[in-house]
Image (cartoon, rainbow, N blue to C red; front, side):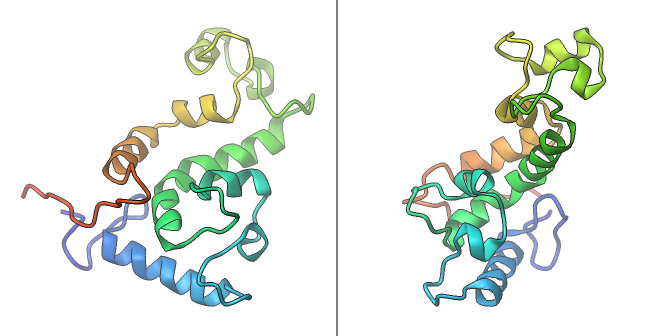
Length: 152
């Protein structure tokens, strides 16, 4: 139902809405006129930008920004969580830093090293499953999916 024109939600707006939001953002922030945004124009950390810049050309175009949008609902809070709770400065979190039990932490710590990095924390986020579905639909930046099959 979210693919019907004008209907969407904050986690996964319909493709038309998302594209309009992205085009407006590029128009507002593109200071060098290249119709793409760099980390400085987006005013984000370089490590966040690396997740957006799929083709690693130093610019985030409309397609890359559209693909990253649903993931940003997971990734950006994770980056903030790490910045806030990382007491030892290793850019990972342990059970103590997260203030959770070791049993709960074990579900997050996929590789068992007693540290949850950004990817492990993102994977444990409840919205990650939605992101994986949307990413699968647009799994190739060179051949993005322009149609969505909908069952009503």
